[in-house]
Amino acid sequence: MPLVRTMIAAFTDENDRARAAATTMTDTSPPDEAASGPTTHFGFQTVAEELKQKKVAEVFSSVARKYDLMNDLMSFGLHRLWKAFTIQLAGVRKGDRVLDVAGGTADLSLAFARRVGASGQVWLTDINHAMLARGRDRLLDQGHALPIVQCDAEKLPFPGDSFDCVTVAFGLRNMTHKETALAEMRRVLRPGGRLLALEFSRVWKPLSPFYDLYSFKLLPWMGARVAGDPDSYRYLAESIRMHPDQREFKAMMESAGFGRVDYFNLSAGIVAVHRGYKL
Ligand SMILES: C[S@@+](CC[C@H](N)C(=O)[O-])C[C@H]1O[C@@H](n2cnc3c(N)ncnc32)[C@H](O)[C@@H]1O
Image (cartoon, rainbow, N blue to C red):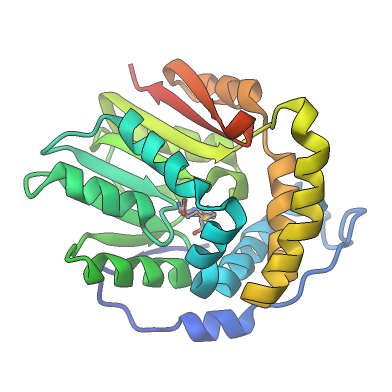
């Protein structure tokens, strides 16, 4: 099984090949016949655990090139405010060591790099090469040569007690074993360090019919027009519905050993930021 490939901004451009490998997804529920072992969710589908990571990889390899544009369009720019709030809440200072898990095209890493200064360090990590390649280019374009590591959040290749702050934005939803990933994020935090998890959550109930209409009709339509890939944006809408709500996710963080866990609803609960400490 995968996969720890350190890249430090020097890998070759194999993302076109990865993108070409992306396949069209079809709804196969009830469970795939291949799913004889443990199963999990991929959007509304039930798939074999080992298949989920592959399917998630296909999604992000397919959308990487248009990912930032689609984020702006889909959220009407709101994702920038959600991320700015998360960064504010992280309270990162000069000299801090920050780990951006599932950091993709590096929005958070960029902001943290400005905050920690030359005495600090920000590590951009993600499991997906195509997303990291975009992140690397954006970082370099803005004068930041950060360490970049392609790795699975469920097996972080860092010693324990290494970071003051760990962040994961819109990543956990896509992971097969969220509890394992949370335990890993806690392990690499130093005592007193904090995790900030920004993720889609449960929208305020009166808004949900409009939100459903938007996400199940408009999102795939936009995905088709802009990214040429409606299925990946259908997966986005479905995976949001399958993710634990605010309270369940708080409980999950507590079970993973985080203390003083609290959360903040943004945009009527469309997203929430959870914060917890390694005490
Ligand atoms: C929606 S993107 C979020 C990117 C970025 N954090 C942002 O907020 O724009 C989700 C990212 O999670 C990554 N991801 C999914 N499963 C992962 C895993 N097991 N380990 C690390 N990254 C993962 C994907 O490759 C993708 O880049």
